[in-house]
Image (cartoon, rainbow, N blue to C red; front, side):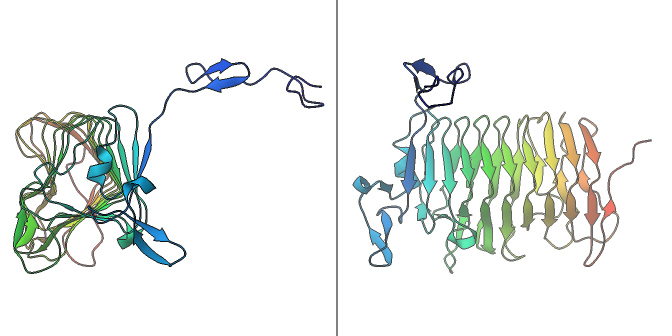
Length: 328
């Protein structure tokens, strides 16, 4: 018999890398990992897919499903690395000033594509998601930040604040305006360090849906905003990314398509405030609606930003021109 008790097989038994487990009599004891919670429902009642009846049916939490992300978060332990899997077809209303209570190192991951992804609807003006814990990830979800489609006026003041360290938003859809009286004020304020906003879509459905700000950076050191699509109506010189109040260091804004949709718009990225921002703005495709003589990216002498290969378009069916002052 060989070393492993298998004829013809010999050698030393395998071992786990240092720190990943302890060998005990030929077995390995691994550290406790995060738990996984599954969500599908309407925010109050959980649903599961009944294969026998070929339809969604109601089921209580004892069956392993939670009716809302809010309720699943209540089962998570800070720092354990818990994961909440939100199944296709889930819907949930966000109707409180602190709609979800986060813990450190939790992931909220939607399953599905397009409109089958989990959908979260902001239904009152004060509804917010304050992402104030470190290592939180929100992925592949749909957020209707201007409320449900309809005729009832609604202005959601501040749908998102990202103040935790290392927060990640990836592959989400955010609807920020439906018409001129169903919209949000400031879509997202980032004050945490090392926040990542990547491969997301942010849009106004109509040009009349003008919001005040899209993403505001305030002391957002290490922020990464990359590979996003944003078509939003804001003030003519406001920009879709704006730095305010406190400088943000080591900013990276890369490979985005930004379209400032308001008539006569002149800016997509706005660092004109007298702040000592530093970082890289590279390989972005920027669209405004004023023909000729606009900057697309606004900077201030107090900052130290490096601009590489950014291209601007002012009009329909045109190729982009390199923008910014060339280095000599």
